[in-house]
Length: 396
Image (cartoon, rainbow, N blue to C red; front, top):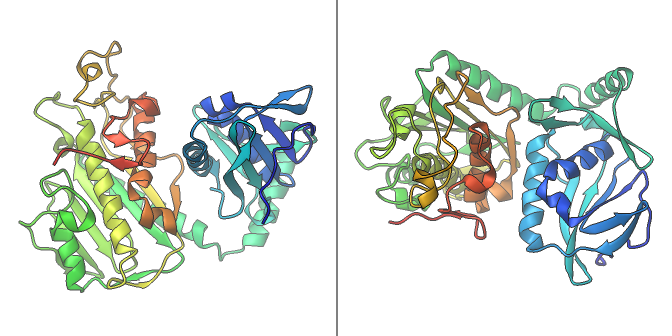
């Protein structure tokens, strides 16, 4: 396949949109165009091409295009509902004069319409492309799109079915809540784990086997023996972190909020490094389980992830790393969380390769949502999460 060339000189149209480099400062501007194309006839969104009088007039090279492509891809998956699947919104770096630009190739699939953009404070916004403009979809148009999509999908949409199962599990956890973090990773597409294998028991007992610190904030530990029951194996105890691995490949994790505190923090303060490491450790476990030949009988193609903080009202999460000056002397005092719980507005979706090869990056996407809920931008997440390598790096 030949390398595409930036369409300099071409004009915007129904299937062509240009955005300058600055659009990467507000990814929602790009997501808006992608949603509109998904609800129309598809097309291409070029990022890094300055537009003048409706035409691409100049290349604006993007710094670290591979990282920006990954960041944009994650944003599209996390803020478009239903999440774009393989081939629906592909982001790639394209060589251009002076460096590289990004191209988003949008392929409209009627069975998944209508698509919505999730916006803070606005909920779902349904948009469509008309010529070179983006317009809000009308009621009649939405009704027809929902009717056609439902008819095409029928009752055999595995993503929709799995999503409902996750939401049912969330409701069950809500009824049992006494104030804890609840995390669920659900494989979609058929998977089966050998829960009786000694390899799995060792993964649960030995943190190093999943790339975690031996004495870190993680699910694993050598003091408790994993227990098998009702098609799953569990490790932990009610007053501390507890993880479940189901025969279906589903992983559940919960931890009481007080365990996320630290002696250097306040009485109702989530310690950033605790939150980061516990969360990342579960994704690392999922990664090893779902790529392990000794454990896996069938492989999933997608993973849905949900997270809820129950009874979190009044708790705080400070920005930056505890190892920096800004953590203690931040100009803005962190505000207590105002609601009883925080839950993802939209489940996160990860393809098999990303979950098994880049678990830390998957965890980072989830942490971004938590920090946003506490009023912090992505750059306020502690520096221990290396943005270049996509790895959580803590001292041993």
